[in-house]
Length: 214
Ligand code: 5RP
Image (cartoon, rainbow, N blue to C red; front, side, top):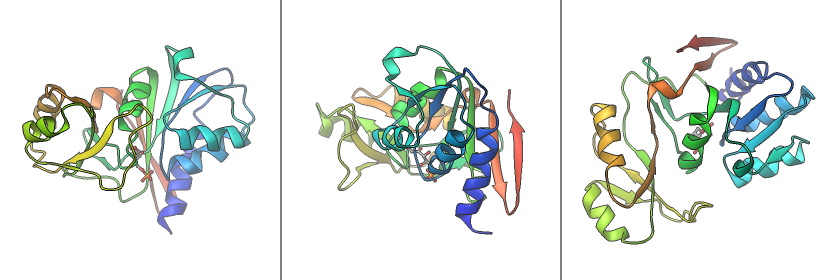
């Protein structure tokens, strides 16, 4: 079975978790690209918030009602892909550079659902860890981070941030997350702690494994 078909199966399973009347956070990426039509096909009365301009455009084209994130302080559910998923629920996100918005949306959701294909589970997290940095003082921030590279050719985030990657060892993800969060000039990083995630849906071949974390 192709990886795209696995992404589609995980996305379809996640779309089934959405109920009429919900406020829904929509992630970003190629797995979420399969979620949007699956959700639109259900014809539910839902209000959505998108984590990227691309998702916002696609969702709107499919007839989903997308509101500005400023309008909703609480979401019932948010659904998003990930780059790496460990057995204990740590994630690396931000391959698409949308991790800062994605973390805000995940944290504001009562239920954050992660969807992925069979390439996403990882025994341990490995670099790179996506970063979003303030443009002000960028050389000093990069120096402080030590091992970080700017993503060549990437435009600024919709919020004006510079997209980069931390390339040093991950080691204990909670220690690295604390260190990154404490670095002046760092707006957001792609390490998502397990407490953010409620469900993980991983498609392997023709079936979807549903792990409930909380
Ligand atoms: C974007 C993300 C994506 O969810 C992550 O990169 C997975 O992408 P894909 O579904 O294309 O494999 O974090 O910032």
